[in-house]
Length: 111
Image 1 (cartoon, rainbow, N blue to C red):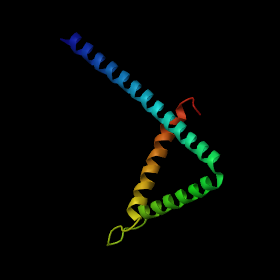
Image 2 (tube, one colour):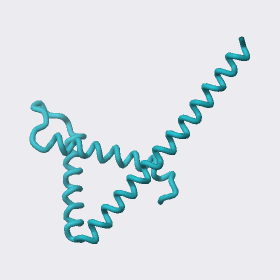
Image 3 (tube, rainbow, N blue to C red):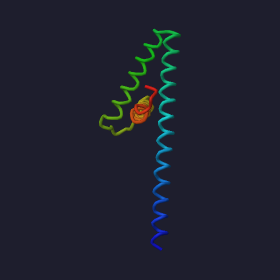
Image 4 (cartoon, helix red, strand yellow):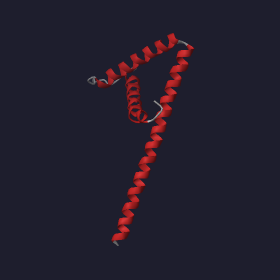
């Protein structure tokens, strides 16, 4: 009985280790692909029109700053109205994407 239980425990451990390694590889490849797509978008945008690229980056920065302000300020009684909710969601999605890239893309050799 003890040998079977030990063999089953070792098998479960190896399955977990292999599963985690495969998941890490998939997440790293996804992060590198996302980083490459972002770099390609920036390159194509800059080659099309540098002025529009800077204006778009400024507008995006303004929207993300508004979203951060809406996310971290003290909530009011009436709830969020107008552009407050979409900018807060945009900030949150951008922050999670940046965190994902920071955790997984920094470990790949694409940088």
